[in-house]
Image (cartoon, rainbow, N blue to C red; front, side, top):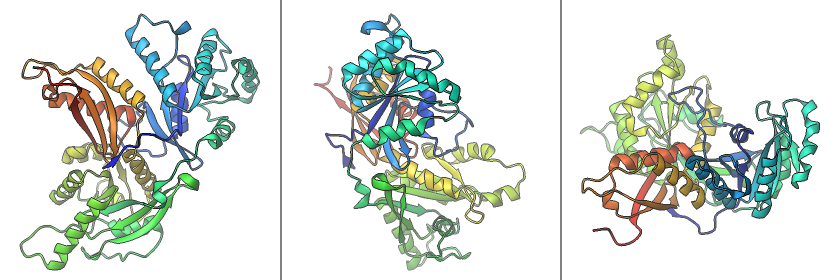
Length: 457
């Protein structure tokens, strides 16, 4: 586990504004939905508090916030609204840059001026995004917002208009940060049982024949490392792709070569940052696949499930679809529910590009660093929505605050009155809430409870 740095990167951009100006739509547009990860509910966009964004190869953290909706910092009588506004101000404090969203169709309203006053006091670098400029005729109205004292740009989250001018102004001002993957590339291990198509997938991925492909199970005996890069410029991530021997079924008559192949695979998992578990979509997950998945969980590694041979699965049964296939897969591998699923065909090339994006996406999730203010915003909301139940001792867990203490895997330390009062079902709820808020698909996360003071009697 890598300890968190005291001084975090300030390549952090927060989206703020009054309610109903399209902040979440703008957030989703800038995040770009680069990876269409398959979920049980197709077409459902999950609102995230924070996510990595990528603009022309430049990566930065993007924070979504609730609406700022009251004058003079007065407190709303609605606790939920008041909490949302308070946490939006925390996000402003955590960010170095602000995208201030207004509604170009409504023009300048007093509440926009109040938000601008708060932003001027924050001392942050601010850019106004005049949203809902769905056609060029509306662009001229952007001048109405000059009185706010920030550069303004007409944009449309729905029509995807105007973002180039805005981001070309903002992105060059992002501070430089060291890219640790230049000297220490992220290691991606491709694992699975024999003949699932691991080497074929890598060959298709790299458009190269550097790895021998054969229909005979177990052809790949040694772990082979191949460098590749995703992105460009200073923020490009550098990888070492590890092709491993297939994990052989453990039998008494297994030879020494196969035994060493399994050992190398286990070592590759342990040394990897992200593990791609290749499954045969035609046969579905087997007992051996579950054992490999368990090794990934035990090693605390980021993971992506790759359903290879999807073309054969579709040919075998005309009615099979990804939507129908996925629930059965999740039922067979319930402990891998955190891992994204990509259906591919190494033979036809189907979804290979998406799988590259998914690998990069999972790698980013495993290295997510969440600012303390935003983390505690989510923690507070989680506790308010579902307070910790009374423990078996009759005492109730009190939650004070949380910090992130590590990445890859992600560790959270939550300070409470007494860790013994925690119930497993509530901790599982909190873990799920953190995933909902921050994404973290494919990233193992761990919550460590710590007593803030001496345990209560």
